[in-house]
Length: 151
Image (cartoon, rainbow, N blue to C red; front, top):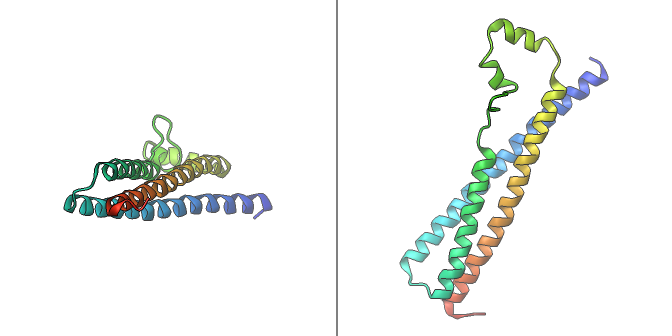
């Protein structure tokens, strides 16, 4: 195996691993956001929050819902639309066409495509973390306002 082939194989594996790692983080964060939303609902339905606490808590909840939406969009499968690449493409080809497609080394093209996917996923994950932090801070502020105006 030449150095170029080894490097292509390593880069391909690295990009695929980054996507898997980002998806795992997104899954964990989505579970955390879901737990925050469930806890918020449980507390809010059993108390009668003040107007300021409702306003701040509502904004915090909206940010958490936005974070959940970002996380869901980052892990949503994208089969390539009208121009599929890799696995989705194979579903449209005959056995002979698959053999011809795989006869060419297309790892560099795959690496470029996978890297773009990884960057989009990572960006969405980063934005979701920021929204989660802001939403959780607003929920803490709402709890302080409800507890007696500690501010």
